[in-house]
Image (tube, rainbow, N blue to C red; front, top):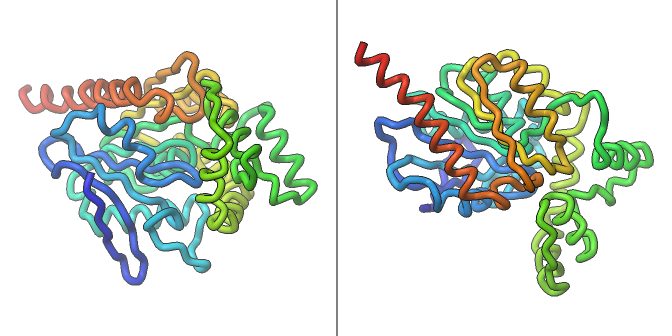
Length: 290
């Protein structure tokens, strides 16, 4: 993957890419909250070399501009990603859009807002759905919101212990991480925590929290929904909600897998993506032959 920067007016996007646009759809990948474009690398290495891949840093993350003026709501992020797409002329031909967690929330709403840009969609445990019952994580968040304890958001660790708890929350496999490594992981994140808090409060605000839910019936492209059965952050029952609302969709549930699907199951996720693209776009070719 090569890293590049592109500007829209005074806003800079950082992205990595591999390959070049060809007859197969390009693939744009949107990472989750407080991650960055490199989170896809574990999966990218299992994808065929002839695919054109683009992984972008989401607004305010890593190499993409962080500005106090930026609209970090889901709609605001969708508009930003559309600017990025236009800068790269990625939508010259419809592309395949992939997103996980917050990135899945943005990807789903993007497909609803810009239907002609996207030929197909993969949503990996996306945020933005409205559940009839809250899981433990969401219950805890609501308690924190009521007590206004912004500094205790479980996805924004400030100590090695909190870091360890976050890793356990996000991953099904329980791995023992040495204290020094936990400290290092926290140290890297601490300078960004003020931004993460601001972003987090924005995406769980009334305006954004259920944006995917409100837009899912507008998604008309073939859609793949991938979810870990043991996801403790966003409950796996979200997969069924999406499948019921998106006409052309298929669900893949992964056993013994938590919220960090791409990190936990990179090879499996890559295979599901490739097989889905083949099934969706092979029918395109047979249509041309009729």
